[in-house]
Image 1 (cartoon, rainbow, N blue to C red):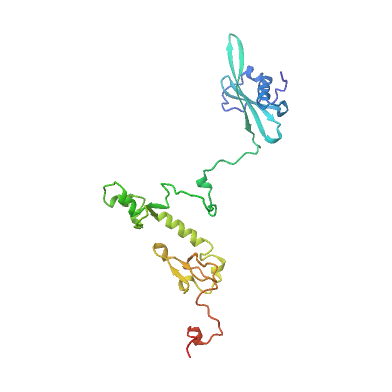
Image 2 (tube, rainbow, N blue to C red):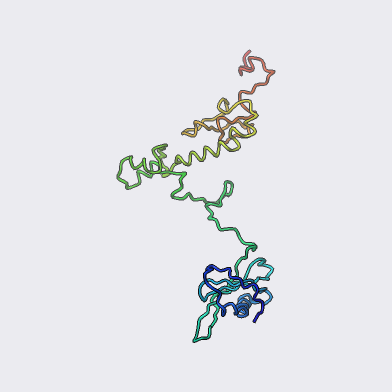
Length: 266
């Protein structure tokens, strides 16, 4: 039996349970169990501690010396029973656990929370959750439902009536939450009013001839750029965005007639 009893510190889950003498003395038995589990005695290092899990139930911890598991510990859980006056110690579990400084994988996060803009590739399918707050029921969904209620129900259905859209042919349409999230994202993005390009622009998209209006509530604050020479061509832009390709930019050397765009007048 090992004589190294110095590390026998009670760091257990139940500090009110005293260390069982029979379990505390069973270090060699615990180490042999770890060797069998590891398949190599070289992978079992020094005894670290004994943890009293409960009355007559303890876990011995040993350093793992396998270079592939630096900082991990072998945990051997043992139980003490009695046959008459003689305690009997048995092995209940042997596992390899990460220690305080072990290299471990980060906590698992569902794919729906890991995915980021730009992750979707050709051929990928990204289903929207049934309760996605960015979407709400369109007119088609209400026609297909068996709900026999008036529009008071619609009012309660995630605020549909606060920004209701018919969405004919679509079971779901953009909800108020989805619209606000999109607006915030576009406003704060590359083609919003706070971008470097916008701050140095001679005019805003709201006064640009290349601006293409969009329908719906978002059209009150956003449009699509149609200027092939603009970095925002084909993109959603804030009406308060702007760039150097604004239609109002005129060469200062043009004549008044040229500035009016009537260059073909004789």
